[in-house]
Length: 406
Image 1 (tube, rainbow, N blue to C red):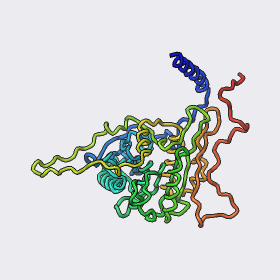
Image 2: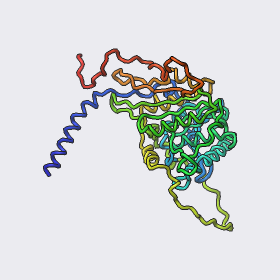
Image 3: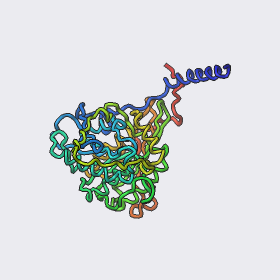
Image 4: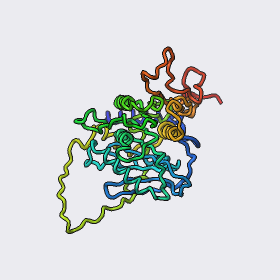
């Protein structure tokens, strides 16, 4: 009993000691008021609906106002095990309020769809959804302005949609944006999403892979493989980006595999009505189900655990200043004819703002791939642009617990 009491006293003392530090610690940057990643939205009310039937449905999000021009289309492919748009709700809302039509295909029926079948199913859902929305005056998709974005295993699915766009009669994307790519099969017999022939990617595609520095080794390898195998996409249209964690202030910023999650309950699938399946003919023979769960319907345990974390993820500076801003700028670059080198060398792209005490948040690391056709002997390659805001001149970080003179 005494030992337990002593441990409780220690815990209370530690909590009391850390409270002043948390109060004095520097706060991270808030969402910008304008520009990429910012709050200068075109409208407030987002329409949330589902099209398709039953399990073969896609969620659609766009502003309620009827657009004066067709909307750019962002096809968002979720992580394995997380087909609920709630897990990315804040980001989906940001994209929709910026004027995009967001299509979220429910390509995975949990424990019923194998990773090997995910890309074909996603392609069918996207094709059907775009056909249904073609004459929709409120949605009004612009099929000349399409981006495929994916997270974890969804990144592999997004990449396959882009590589098979011609064969599947899908719009060729201007931008393919891959976050923490994973769940990729190493060969046809292994578990995971088998990549299509990436040489089939349209050479005009802007291809961006973006990872975090936590749990980074698998995503790093996958990114390099993707950029290497997309051989027909020119080097100046490929970009590798790494988001860096930063514990200078409180709360700290941790660029984990599930950090792109930005949950918002308003986007819970349960609140979005899905059209029912058509009534079954009572005279028709009932098909006997032969379904049973098998191990090849799952990816690694890590993918499943991380997908479960997404639903509880909160929105922070990494969302506003890294993932959302990077996508906004990449989409603008892709639609306006700029290349990956323009993004890499743009100070606004890599800049992450400042903590409240003036210290810069660690900026993004960005580089175009090294190739034999693109070396400059004797010249150090520039991998990221300088920060917009200079580092404080003093050599040490400000101490948030140090008292300042009045």
